[in-house]
Amino acid sequence: MPYVRMRNGSSLTVWWKDWSNPPDRGSGPISAYVVYYRRGRETDWEALQQTTLKLATVTGLQQDMEYEFRVAAVHRSGIVGVPSPILSVSTCGSM
Image 1 (tube, one colour):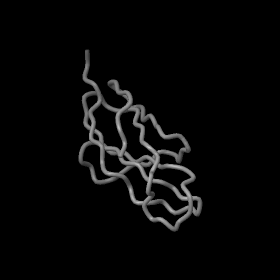
Image 2: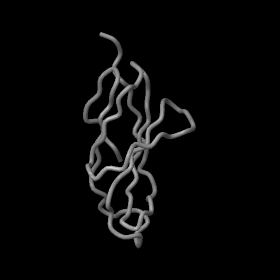
Image 3: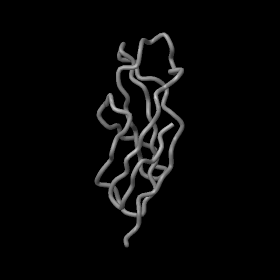
């Protein structure tokens, strides 16, 4: 599950731990992660570029708005695993 590392009015940084028991075992070792996010309860998820890091920053977000994040492991075979539980977090409001 992703966690909030940093947030402000226009960006959010999330991080996550290694998968100790990766979903879809049998698909090979994890080679990267993909982060999905969406605004509020919209139906469509946007995906960030795959990363080998265990953190990602999304910029250009709206102030004082709720966003949802989830992370999935990408196996060396190219199969994307089941996404993590959803993290709901809001950007900061105006000061």
